[in-house]
Image (tube, rainbow, N blue to C red; front, side):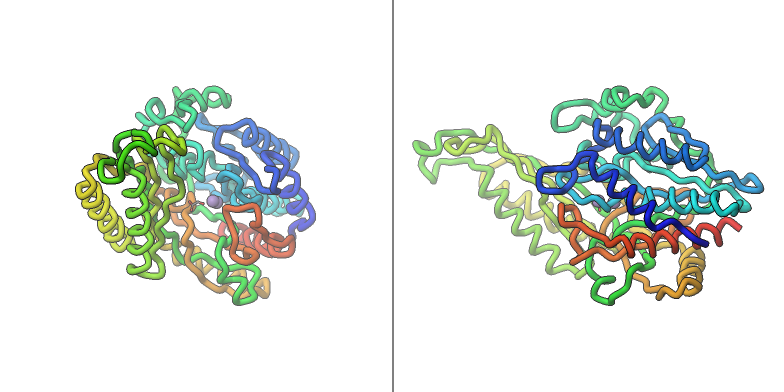
Length: 409
Ligand code: GLV
Ligand code: MN
Ligand code: MN
């Protein structure tokens, strides 16, 4: 098996123009013009490569390499959307690695026994609409379809309207769910986003499992008043309550397990002025763990604290669950094949867990899942400094191609 290392890296560089930010990062929200431009560009490369290209009703992009026989296809891919001011590798590396693997097979006249499909999944990050892993939840049929009409982005645009503006067909969203047995396995290549591979001086790793997350939105309501005139003892100020709760989020995760992670990623105050006590503070909660029970215990501790602080301070409010993903173990059979492929290529089959969430967590509902990780410089991700070297992208892509080839035959 061979791949074209230069081509996959040049394409990664090329995609980085779509949504590039002033400090060198990328903002490419789901269903935005920037994401559409990146997706259209990849679709063009897929056609050039001779793949059979199709888009489903919710903006997922598929490309198929036919097999000698029909039957369940192998699925491989990732996503092209990003977090605000994120990095250029989270997602695109896996989409372009998948394309490179398929294109290389075609060029070398390697026809797999069964078909292989690549995919770019819409809205993995949940940065625009408050629902991550969105494209894959349509594929598995688990998306709560009422959210199409109800869910809005921070500008108030409904998901349904965003899909329509994108050129997708939200009225037919249910058609994106695949039939049972359509896929035999899902294999995703992704950057590690943490520092284990770097600390072990390894270019690639094999993912053992993916953490599960719960994301919630909290709202704390107080009373807007004059910041200078209102005495300290007469205030109903939601901001100090938020501060106390945020500290408890950190404590709850630290006192849990090293695999527990809890984050308040954004806080907004209304009306939002230096000289006004806020009427309302909204804050996000993102709580994850490889162990679902431990994650939920951490969340319950935060909830109890939230309720107690609001009560003590005479405030009202609630924490509302917005998105859940289940922790999964990667499939042992796939991990074996991937480990053998790695050894055949002279790579150490080192296994490591993923603290980040990936579409595979959803896709595990319909077929076995495995992932390849690429070394991330300094473990940095979801920031402009995110970086994986061209050599490591090439090593991971070669392992992906070899794994897909072995699995499809
Ligand atoms: C996706 O990057 C996530 O883990 O939130
Ligand atoms: Mn990400
Ligand atoms: Mn990602």
